[in-house]
Length: 312
Image (spheres, one colour):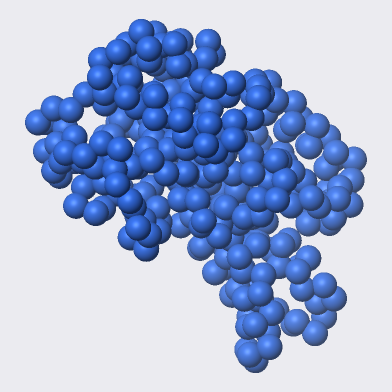
């Protein structure tokens, strides 16, 4: 392959990776899909490709759909043991992020909701909401009619909206303050204050420190508060499991405030929060090692600053 063709592909690699991550919810799988797209580009008769960007988008999207439809993926995801891979803000896979819809489409809350859509609905939703493709363009990418694209988009938006109660969007500083209060209440035994910081429809989802076979899900303010209090209570057994004393840092993950747990400079867990109207509406706890590698790599390249909790 000549250097011009390689350069042409590399110019669009970031966009393809962002698309694949939204479709698959996994940075590792997204990278594999992009590499497979490159191999198809390498083998293609490129002189017959009129619009390379459209061709690459079509190939990458359909490779992702093949992964979503595979028997192994269906088993893993329907078994209830799957959460999206968290990414530290600044990761290029989180782009584009110019509009509210683009930023929302990559939050852990929405990526989790997208699991309830069919692969076709998920693809149309992502292409439309995050990348602003027209229905005519989506129809060409997915080999469906424009009418089918519109129907998929309507069903996807309806299903996502049914699970989302949008309130006043919190600015990053306000959301951080809410999480700081939440963390202080969770680690001090102030259960009443913890309950007061949760919305009436709060949900908590966790992979059980990476040990549970199925995801742990909690609803209602009292149950979530009890789960959080137990989770943030330090014990010798927990420190042995984590590999030592933890330092907890505030950061942003997938566009929302998060607590990142670190032992010896290595990320061992992350809890991402969705803040709505000054309260925590949902939280996602991820500690499975295989889900944290990219976040940990990004963490190593930054100055973490002073932890909000040290020697946990």
